[in-house]
Every structure is written in structure tokens, then in C-alpha cells.
Length: 99
Image (cartoon, rainbow, N blue to C red; front, side, top):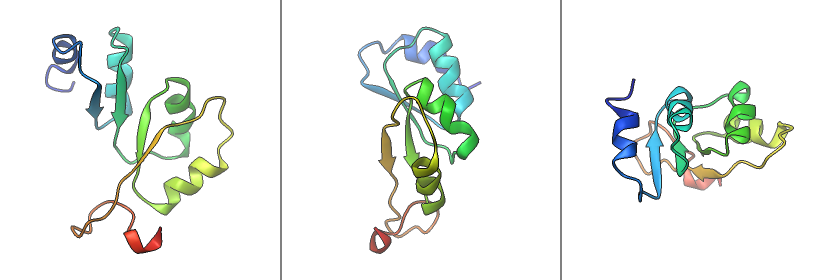
């Protein structure tokens, strides 16, 4: 999983953060003893939020539905959020004029 994800992370102990696409990858890094921050960037849904919160993972918000899920969730820990903006590719991200 992840093209040598854990091995790569272990060779970069001074990295500020590791960006991964899937929650499973972030959990694998955590289980492997990697303790610096993760930016979990795949589209999450409400079912992922308790794990994201409990593991102190950062996550990206790609759309208004995800933002609503965060606002409605009853979580024990806050979640650090990165807003993904649609800068013209129209694939992922919140359109700036909706913010």
C-alpha cells in the first residue's frame, strides 16, 4: 500500500507533514510509529470523522456537504481542516464565490 509509504516516511523524520490520499494510509503510518502530522486529502464522509478526530489527522474539505458533516458531527476532539478551493479546474474544491 502506498508505494513504500511507511519506509519513505521513516527516511524523512524531519518532515513537517505527510500527505496521503486515503484514511487507511494515514492509519498505516500511525500504526508504524510515524507521529508527525498527516494531511488526509481524500473525499471523506461523516462515517470517517470519528477516526479522523481521534487520530488528530488533518483533512481537506472539498465541498459544502463535507463542511456540513463537520458542523453536524459530535466529535471528542477538534479537526484541523484545510479548505480545497476550485481554482478553475472544476474537479474538486469549493468555488471561491460560495465562501
